[in-house]
Image (tube, rainbow, N blue to C red; front, side, top):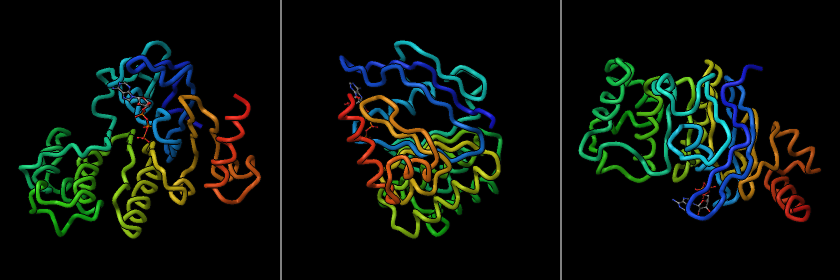
Length: 239
Ligand SMILES: Nc1ncnc2c1ncn2[C@@H]1O[C@H](COP(=O)(O)OP(=O)(O)OP(=O)(O)O)[C@@H](O)[C@H]1O
């Protein structure tokens, strides 16, 4: 297993709170890894540290062999935040073409990215006029257009209907099959089942790092929702 992302003894403080407290994990290349945990457990903070936009107190984050946030990684990482980051006064197609141009790619790649997120029929619509779910997909199109080796997606399927969610997950799986490393945070357990590996965080600490099957086995249930509740409660008792 080749490592794409390594986080070692990471400590992050935000305000007065220690959000991640000695967090370590390894994320394999060419995989889809699900990042799960209660609201406020530190998922976005971990993603920000991996992308290199989070001030860290101590520890190390290495991505594709380089320190997180370093110059060689700028074109290799795609990051989709919870708040869509696209230009509201441009159309979906113009946004995708703009982001494609940053990677020295052309209209064909931009078009393919828009198609991949199911926005082909909205290509010429201004982002300002899109629904919330469509706007997130426009943001996703701009992140995938450069074919990044590492794709960090913060709850990319929120607000999407089940058919679209399914198609987006097919797309994530396809990207991983082609060699990309995809880290996805989610609250939806049927999505967690589609990951190669799961990282479960509670209060800034890692409480599970395994395949969905192994997590279920460890918790003694076939239901991933139940498995997480059990592991979280078990850890809560032990803490
Ligand atoms: N700028 C900030 N200043 C102070 N505390 C912050 C800041 N941003 C986040 N936090 C705190 O850090 C903790 C972790 O936040 P984070 O956004 O990483 O959680 P999360 O697991 O992504 O949550 P959610 O699932 O709700 O998006 C929370 O307690 C949050 O209140």
